[in-house]
Image (cartoon, protein in one colour):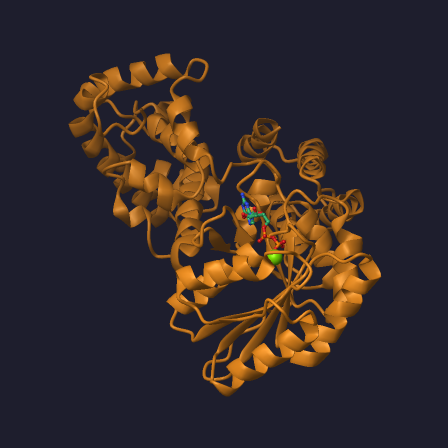
Length: 451
Ligand code: GDP
Ligand code: MG
């Protein structure tokens, strides 16, 4: 399906006439992809309606860029689905921020707390944990082990059976010691659900948390709405974290959690290690929901890319051309497309020796932000190349010598002529690099862009 949607998006990029048919095809593919990713049907219907209302092709004045209008409407409505518009809680330096975690047993609370503690501790916050899960046997040991590995102070008890009391005492002690991030772990199961929600209510009243984080597992599909609402009524959820995104689940249920609580998604969990926590990024989450790129598993992707149908021959043909110094813009187009399919660019870059470093960087907020910026840049390049003719892509004309062609490409892709020139410069750099690497690729040695 991802391929189908990619096709619909490409069609939108390349078609000369953007009409209702193009729009309807695109909407159909977008909606189907979302439903397959566990997004609630009602939510999908609202999205479709929202886009349709925003895009009025019949009344669009002549000369208006219809393509842009459709793209913007689709993106804006998609972002609205994952972004409640509420600002996430901001930790306050030099103050005790009490963060209470809630969620069903097995959703990944205790694991996520360790990741969360690691994240803030590394940033220099004085961090600690309190174990208020007295229901699950071994809960305290699990938290204690994580805390010990991370060298984060913890509080809990093997004998005290009252979780409210432990939470209260632990938080009080750490507050008095001036800890800045005090994380409270809770139970996710009870003999009866009512009792669980009652317990959350009591713990919240006892520790007065600054933020309550609802943890949900990406596989939890449609059932999430009621559950998130239950926790929200008990303890006023302020943030959502989705775990287990390293598996097959796309995590569309998260949209139901956002809808039920009005709280923003802040982090995504993608593994069992302390580092497997990514700051939430609407763009990449959406592309994941749409099946436009698998965020993980790209290692397997790389090794299988060459084996794809026709891929091997195409690559060999390309390698042959490379040796002769005939790397074309079309080759670059294909390379960029492949790279974007692989997932987080920061990781892919490490595997592509010689990838111009200026394509990376420039983003904010660490790895996630950088990926966003780099992906955005590649996408713009692809859009500009979509406005080129076959002769231009295949290097039959020298674009550096034709200002009118550059201007035409710029107009066709909504870019500034200088951006097109930057693209040509990038292409020249790639060309250089491939001239050097071509022979190595032919021998199947290290250092090729694809193995
Ligand atoms: P809790 O009951 O909510 O505290 O959940 P735990 O933190 O004990 O996690 C339950 C199970 O899920 C454990 O086996 C964790 O290792 C696993 N887990 C938690 N987060 C992730 C994740 O992001 N990815 C994967 N693959 N497993 C996870
Ligand atoms: Mg736990």
